[in-house]
Length: 130
Image 1 (tube, rainbow, N blue to C red):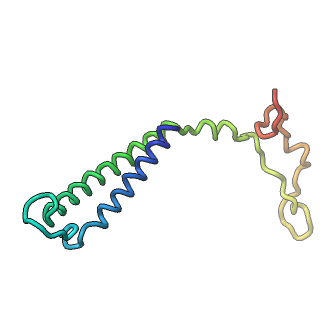
Image 2 (image 1 turned 30 degrees about the vertical axis):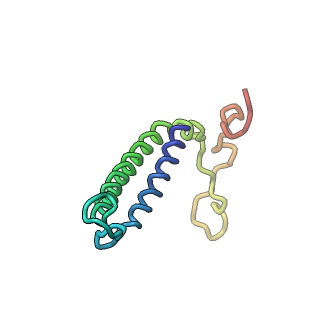
Image 3 (image 1 turned 90 degrees about the vertical axis):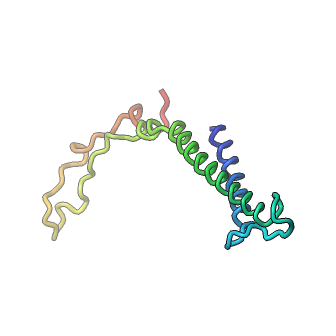
């Protein structure tokens, strides 16, 4: 569980950085629009290239983290805890309207004969301990 929490925090940081880098770019691809010499890191072209590369690698990191978090989530959760607590001995209840005037259904059998109450030790939701 701590690995999943760590990956969630890292993915949130990567997502925030990705949003920031995308918002710093110009829609025409001009980068930050910083003037200066035509070559070098802080020129308009250098800033655009840096932001484009940063966007690419942050997007790759985001997708890889998403896949890793999905794999960790599948490994840490199991359906056994849920399915083992279900009470599978439930039977149908008799129709309360059966046998009344205006109802064409056949009268129901007595409730004691058709329904078997599970023993308290067999009922996982009863709270009884063994």
